[in-house]
Length: 316
Image (cartoon, rainbow, N blue to C red; front, top):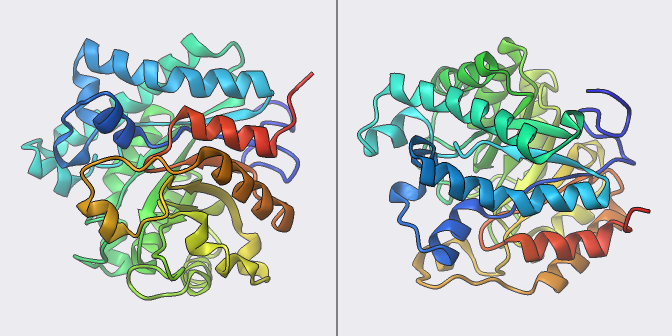
């Protein structure tokens, strides 16, 4: 990366945007059928790639207009062996999908940005099991072996970084961080929280971060929270300490509903974009290191625009 503004990991005075809720946008706004909530099969067709490009374009445009960086995700949250098997896709085919996803994102960066160094290609890792339930739990060693092929595919294809999203217990985070570290691939760990501010496994966010850092030698570049509304974790983040300073990113849900309520919903709850932006601003006033700003389920470009309005002065 060239220049201080867009260096990785972001400095306190630099900001990177991300997109919003890819899968919820495609399903609820565009009416697509995504079996197993998997977006990566869209890469196999020209129409699917076009839909992905049209989805990301306004987010990248906003980053350019605001003169900030952008973290460009691969659509690979479900592209691991277990979810691939549910879709009748072999492990070898899944590995190739992950490599192709990075290549596709790299070409999209060239098409939509004149400054490659402001856009980071981010290989997205999802949980082995359900993001909302701590089922099929692994040991850290098992998680390292399980997630290594996806991370290796990202590294081979030239990803700038990887992010593990919607994790709900520490051992999976530890395994992913170890696997990425052994490959020399910068990695971000993002936990999801329940309405009580705890992980689905019952751990506190502090415990999960401290355990992951302790058992990996502080391998993650930073931590994030995703797939939860700020009302679920604002109280937790009022605690100060070294662990909380390791949190540099937020990708919140639009809705204040619990995960169980969201699972049962047949309609999308888009929440209040302006209120979401204000909550991001309030958190950044307390946690000045928060420099990666984006969305998760139910959010779209309206929410990211509102976050920008609340947190980022217009450039120029």
